[in-house]
Amino acid sequence: MSLPNRIRLHYSAEFALAAEEPSYPKTDNSQLQLRGPMDADAFAAAYDAVVHDFPITQSLIEEAREGLSHRLYWVLQPARGGRPANPLQRVDLRAEAAPGQDPVQLIQDFHAERTARVRDLTREFPILFFLLRLEDEVHVLSMVYHHIAVDAASGYELIKRILAEYHRRVTGEAPPWGESASIASQAQDRAPASPPGFVPYLRDQLSEYYLKSQRDISQVAGTRRPGTLGRTCHRAIFEPDGALGAMKRLAKKHQASLSDVLLASISRTIATWDRERGLPARSQRCVLVVNSRGRIPETANESIALTGLALPVTAPDVRTLGAVVEHFRDVRSAQWAAGVDVANFRLLDAIARSTRLMPRQARYFLARRATQVPVTFLLSNIGIMWPEVKGGRMTGRSELTEAGGLSIDDVHSCPSMAKEIGLGVIARTLGGRLFINYSADRWRFTDEEAKALTDRINADLEAIP
Image (cartoon, rainbow, N blue to C red; front, side, top):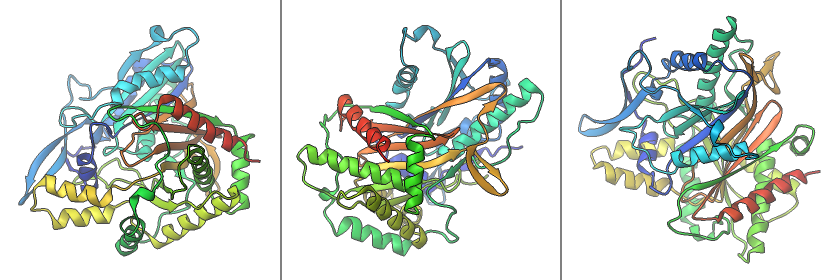
């Protein structure tokens, strides 16, 4: 395959890059734990073979004139010594693990310094892969990525291809899994037939933000510490025969999705949390991000728009959990059916085209003013990783849980934050289990507050009958 040497950034990616602030780098990380004997040299060779088809992993940003305006491009960097310009980095952490230390904390400590600053993508590759060795037969495949370059759907697709190539190299056989999607959203069944509508989007924006005081939006009570950088990450695992089973039964009872159940439970927990801290009742703005298609491999001329359908929902007062589940179900379904362009693709494109002769910083200012709004919490969709399909229907299980003698038995994530977001939540299902990862801003919460809040959310989910 011949790789494109230059890929123009989509306007949505360019504006997102410009909106990045020193306190809020848009660098995320995602990891898979691999258990079993590993041929690390074969794994590195599999990585080298696969990233050839994903040029954005080997590209840096350059600015170029395009007509009367300036545009940003991903520019492919040449291979070095027969290896990709951005190779897999192998790190042995066995000596750094203290006796009895939680491996999750070790993984988080490793990534903290790599995600705490804004990265210069004219000099640093947007996606970095690490192979961390925690024990003799326990490895973690880590992807540290800038969010304008890759999303979860694309990242899991890239990882699936690396695992498939590794399987071929160590077994001499084709992998037993098929060509299913890298992640299947449980928030909706299919993408809308027509593009999102700009008019419904604009109507939603006017009613939601500009005709109502933004100060009424709750962003979760916490001890604010201006100047404190970084994020605190916490997580929980829910088993299919326990709390996850109860969540599914509740969703089925109200003809809703698991995302609706999780949105409702988090919303009620935050309302109670704020009330206990003496805050008056305020509206919530909860955003559900749903992958609609992967961002890579790229086209030969322009990167794909930032993916995801963000569904703003104003939560009701605290009521029964079932009533709140139905509220989220109804609002989400109505907005999805209307094709509301809440992901800002059309708005950003309209701003870019109408201001293309203006200085870049002025264009970026307009884009930020139009798209940055306060959010109580953000939920990245509950999705089945590498879903198994039989008879044309998903079974609810993952088809990829083992590769080349390695079992995939854990998944970690820590989403990036933004000034306007109170709490970030990522939910994924793998091997029948639900993994929930939380990200809390350190200037908004103390570490103790972040743990107390996420523990409260987990306890409320466990209490669903």
